[in-house]
Length: 342
Image (cartoon, rainbow, N blue to C red):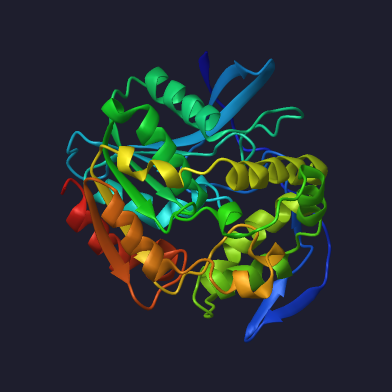
């Protein structure tokens, strides 16, 4: 395995029309199309690549290794992004952490953002955790604080179960997987069906979903950058591969629950929940009576914290699925207050 550094590739631009898709928001549809590894979208800090072979494919994992801007405290934080976000989405959190003296590693998982989109890959949370652990070993990082948001929270739990000796603390920010959607009645669908759904992704569909779920029905112009980041991948020349990888990830989240293993998470856990969150994978596939029971985060957060041996629950009553973006000052104040606490 080896580390590589690359320079950003040129942006691919497409002319397009403007569409107003949220109240008071003029969104730029079909403006920028990014390459299959998000070529053309600039990250806030330099991007490095960890090259290795996995499942017979030569792949590379993108990451930012950001040094502290204040006096170093000797601690490293590793950030796991959600399914609809990238390492760059942690921009405000990285800035807050480095100002507090932390070294920060923000990873793009395989299949996402600036990392390789394999043609044939068995996506498992164990595989993604193993990839990340190999990266950290290559950097000489023996233990770290792991912070995971959304799907990254589900991955963070699996990582802590696999590598408990390497995790000082696990921070879960509105993690998915606090319930077993299949057991509750969400019907199975094939990867092919997930793929067809992913191919329909547009800036409008991303924005509408995020407004309703990530930001508790509100919208701010600062969110648009992350909408266009994701939409640009689906507009670009790699959209088929992007959608296929996303479909495999959808299937992974649905079929590989960590819900039944909360009691085995031995590391200290900080569970940070926006109570207006209502995320549930496959919710739209469920019958209306079942759909109404899914994604009840005020209840799910309390239940999860009660089952984890060393958990502390912090709730934001008025925030949605992405409190670190919706209210960064409040979120980071709470995060820094509790980092290192049990």
